[in-house]
Amino acid sequence: MSTTQIKCNQKVVFITGGGSGIGAATTDLFLKKGAKVISSDFSFPAVELSDVDFNLNPVKIPLDVRNQGQVSKVINMIVEKFGNLDVVINSAGIFKETSVFEISEDEWDNMMAVNAKGTFFVCQAALRYMIKQKNGSIVNISSESGLTGGEFSGAHYSASKAAVIGMTKSLAKLSAPYGVRVNSIAPGTISTPMISHLLTNSETIQKEIDENIPLKRLGVENIPLKRIGQPIEIANVICFLSSEEASYITGGCICVNGGTLMP
Ligand code: NAP
Image 1 (cartoon, rainbow, N blue to C red):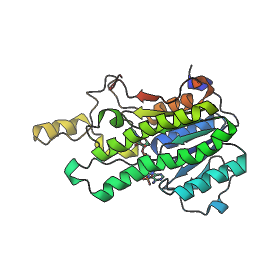
Image 2 (cartoon, rainbow, N blue to C red; image 1 turned 90 degrees about the horizontal axis):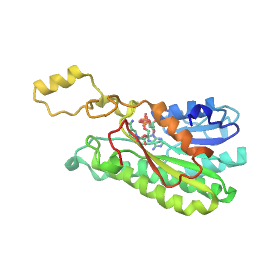
Image 3 (cartoon, helix red, strand yellow; image 1 turned 30 degrees about the horizontal axis):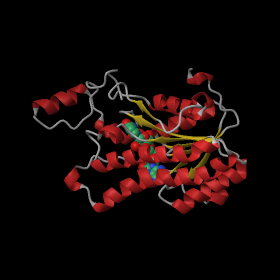
């Protein structure tokens, strides 16, 4: 089944982290498929929720997922405006490479607050409605680092992404009796602004080897498909997982990584 065949007409889709990378590609894909998309991001220009134009597509809402009250208000408003909520995608996230002995308490707390707690707040608010409407699908973006411990990512990033996989399974068990599905995706290396500073050409890698500088950059040598992924290649899997074509998948963690991890 190609995602080009999946239709999303009339579906109400809420996305976090929709302003960049995977979230932006997912917003575009759902728009092309005819969905009503509400895209939120920390980086969207500040506007009062009461001034947001819900007639646009996508609707754009500034949202910090760490703020439980604000998350709840946004979800309530979406349901009030459209009457239902079909799909939720949690793509908001932050990444840091800080080495173990350099991670401060504040940095640890913020990593967990955005990647783990923020994902939970959005799921919590969405499930209140999805369970009542006995329908809905949530896709949380974890990371390969959450399964294997990242080589480049900090321990706090890996921990926060493992938390996403664990909470996804708990929430999937809770919501399955109501016909609601919750899944996660563990992407490998995807070309987005989040990791652009780690991507480099082979000339730079060779220079680092010649000068005996510890290799800090991501090359494609260890990826079986010999390339990094594109945001649309994650968006396509999100689209499939959220659709009726994936109706028997819940609590899953789907690896999309060019072959680096074959669980
Ligand atoms: P990205 O381009 O940096 O997009 C992430 C978005 O989340 C940004 O627009 C960011 O806004 C937003 N954000 C950060 N903190 C937020 C908050 N508190 N509330 C709401 N939004 C917030 O990165 P991406 O690569 O698309 O990442 C999407 C997801 O995929 C993340 O969860 C990431 O951990 C995961 N992932 C990415 C890769 C990869 O290789 N790219 C691999 C595995 C997993 P600002 O720009 O203002 O910070």
